[in-house]
Amino acid sequence: MNLASLAIAAIQLFTMILISYMVFADVRYMLRRRASKNWPTTAATIARCMVGFRGPLSGLPRVLYRAHFTYSYCVDGLKYNGRFFLLVNSKNAGEELRRELVGKNVLVKYDNRKPGVALLIVQELAEKRVMQGPSWTYR
Image 1 (spheres, rainbow, N blue to C red):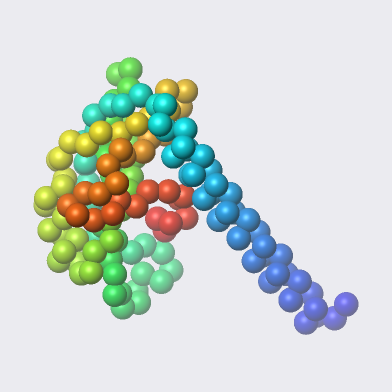
Image 2: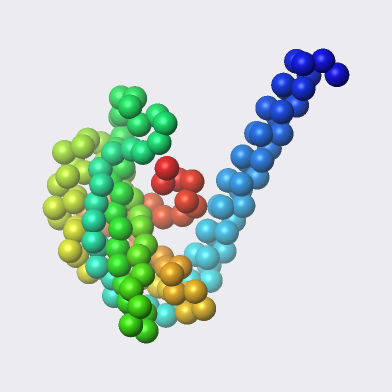
């Protein structure tokens, strides 16, 4: 094998691993969403919001922004946190959502075997689709 063949094989292997991880994360989220129909419900409070993108491409111009929200809830006296994001078309729109939603109460369903795993019940907040799911979608 020459160096070019090894490089191509390494790129193919990396691509397969990355795609496998993304598929696994999506399947896990889908199974959690399905299982959550039987989970108990509790109140949560939207705690914080950060508008923008994170990661290596965060310096590029944006057409869409993400408003990253965290929420907190208590189960058996212990505090847990979750997260979701909403897509917005400008940083100002994200800041408006932050002002509107931070401090608001929402309902979540949590896994009673693993209370740190929770999903918002609502599919929309402030007329925006709630984005939850695999952790790679947040980076």
